[in-house]
Length: 77
Image 1: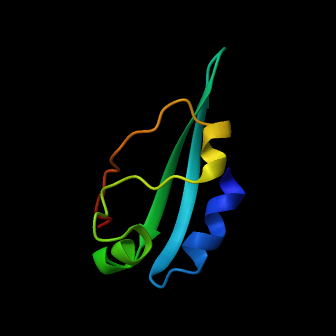
Image 2 (image 1 turned 90 degrees about the vertical axis):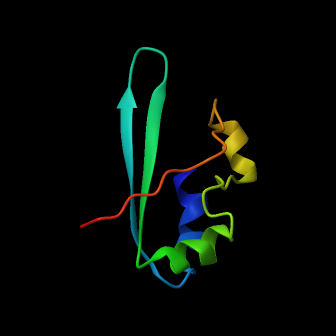
């Protein structure tokens, strides 16, 4: 899962970095992906004009149990 997104991010101009957070319980592991971009235009170059719509890959169905429709954007300051 982690390796499949890296080439897409790295080939997008304006991509800065990403990190995964993980929390586990007795049943599941929960992940948060945090990406850093130079600006909103860079995010749109990656995600498209509907930049709040979550982007999934074919492999994700092997790992994810939920597929939220939207992502949340924050500013780093």
